[in-house]
Amino acid sequence: LPLNRGLFLTTSDVAAYLLPGQGTAFGDPSRPLAGTDAATGATCWYSVFDRNNFSALILGSSGAGKSVAAKTLLVRHHLQGADVLVIDPESEYRSLTTALGGEYVELGEQSLNAFAIDPSIGAEEAAGWVTRTLSVLGGEERDYRNNRPVRALPAQDMAWLFGEVVEFIEAWRQAGWWREPVLGDFCAHLEGPALRRAAALNVEGRVKRCADIAERLRVYTQGEKGLVFNRPSTVSLRGPAVGVGLCRLATQLRADLTPALAFVLAALLGELRKTGRRRIILVDEAHRVLSDPDAGEVLADVVRTSRKRGAGVWMASQSIRDFLSSSSEGRPAPGEVLATVAATKLVLGVEHGLEHGVQETFQLTDRELAAITAQRQPGRGVLIGEAERAIVDVMPGPHLLPVVSTNPVES
Image (tube, rainbow, N blue to C red):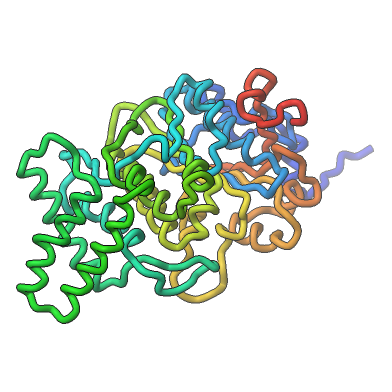
């Protein structure tokens, strides 16, 4: 029979099944183990530190295995030398932090101080971090967004308050005090030098605004709130593995988490600086932060600053809507910005009704979308590392599973 030629058109998906050894994504075994490629069975290895930035987004609806996946990747990056810090609104990471030989602190029992900023950081840069937090504590409800109050101070107040924070930090450093300043010290500054300066400038309404803000801030220096917001830091965030739990603060002290989150994140900014070690900051249940307009802005500050200082922010969330692109005009929400900025994304199971938004935001193929919707199973997700991507079954393994899962038998 004569030899004939035939032209066959196929897709990259089919090629991946037929030629698993050709161009396998995430194939460097020197990197942390992520899992297996759902299409080919090939082992996938992944490090966020190979990317343009070290930030990551880990999304999955309830039951998709988001928590196990986030903990698995966090532990394996830590075992390869990365320091880890977990901001834990629901206090779920205590056993994991302990297993890593680290320290777990519960805010309320311990305290963090947003004013404890290393002297090597300039007063203006430090004031930028602190002012946003003071704006959350000292503002009044002006508006509502995402059904949550917007309390941040208006721009005209932020401008002069920033100047007063700079003055306060510089004066404190020049005085050579033996201890770090606390919120009560800044309140005294507002009630003294700042108030006199406002009176001398004779700007309409400035004296009253200064007194009002000082009065609101004073509330956080008294009683049980003072134990959280008005004492020097009793713990350090610089260890190789640190977890900060917020559950006691919300349940026992019945405190509003927004000021607490802002205060913790500002304290974190104060300790972020370049070191010889890489660092990962995991914000668990990130929707608890992003749903609040004020705390979400502080988190965005942490993301921007961490990138400059050699750290990466990971956000784990089951509220996928907070990260999807919206067609509405105006300034994008913090979640949308973070979904765009993060070089690493792991998208696990998605509930019905979000398919189109997820596919558009993360530019998923039909096969990738099917893997996390119609064919979803716990631990399976689309792992995206800039230009590389694969459908991955995250694999904690029998030794790690008891550490990363709250119910290892069921998992």
